[in-house]
Length: 107
Image 1 (cartoon, rainbow, N blue to C red):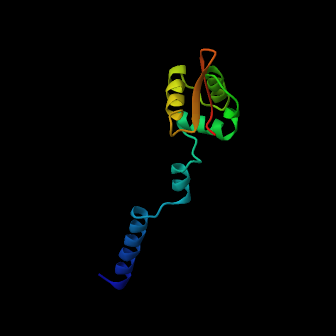
Image 2: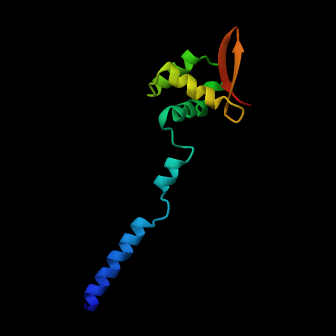
Image 3: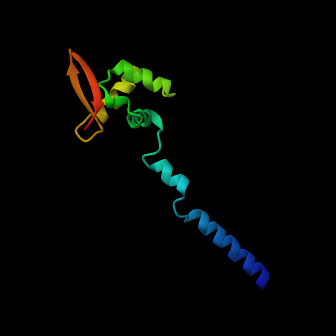
């Protein structure tokens, strides 16, 4: 093997190692971070960040707001996600008002 061929192999090896063992890029970090509003929970987090839950909101209002932001999901799916986000460690609080469950931002 000549020096030229050896240098070419080393160059390819370096390129492969960088591809396989690359450190996390900004795109990867933002996709994992809280700035990623993907899926139903991401849509709910988006409207939380926009201040939608500064007032008490019912399930139908939440679903309408999500649809307005391009998140179209069934009532059951929205209810499940909202219920999970309104547990003790979640960003929302749930309570009954006039027999109807409403949700607001946890303070």
